[in-house]
Length: 314
Image (tube, rainbow, N blue to C red; front, side, top):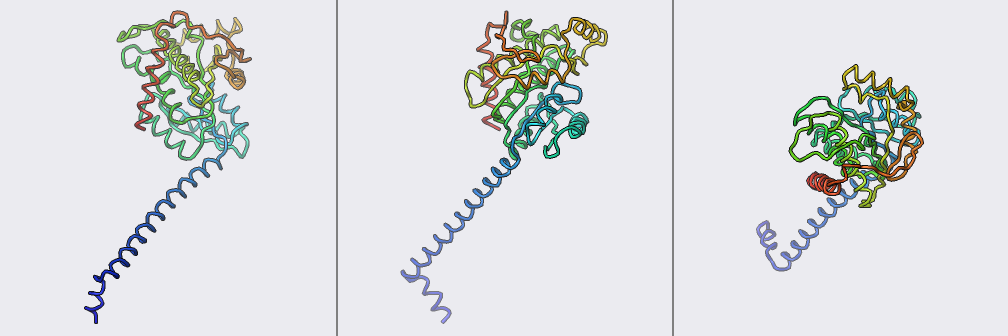
């Protein structure tokens, strides 16, 4: 009888029934797999929506402009992500912010070195997995008093390329670019020529970043890009300067009434709404690139292509 039952499987009618059962089984597994993936996607989306309004501020070390901006945004957001290139600064910023931020607001510290491409990609993946970034503040910058090709590359990555890559990856609804009035003194640097002046290198990197931000605004990529020049702010950026130069700079600007605190500058950044604004009142100003206009569009296009290449592979 056992042999007969086994042999009965090979009858045409039994074979058709077995084939139908196999197809049904495979389809059931496929449906279950797809349902699981959809459920996971829904869970991710629900988690992002549950966290509400999320803002990311780069360069948010205590005492700096980024920290002051993040502290103000904590009163209008549900999640504030503050970044710093080292763990001590990030944790210190969070500890200080939690003292004044509303109780319901989550303040999250993240390490982010804008000179590290892989680090930017990892950061963006981690953040966008759990949050829907509504606002991004590209504040972090480096002056760097060292000379040489490595210093040139580092400054350009932190001030220009890193923020552009981060912007493309997190896809925030609104992007605030903290610019610098020093871009007015920038000169176009010849390709392959090393900078001999740290101030000129910094000015040129801020000029290029401004050009690219304005190019993104003109492209209408779905995000609102706002460029804001806070003016002369007493922050940690000048800590890299020689002590004597830093003191002369502060005394001169303070006596002229041009030096503003980070808190006052943050107030102006919060009011910024336009292509280019300046100062604590966020006054709209025309962009003045002076000698830097040569090759502006080509430079912006070059960096946009660079970020698009990395985003495509990320």
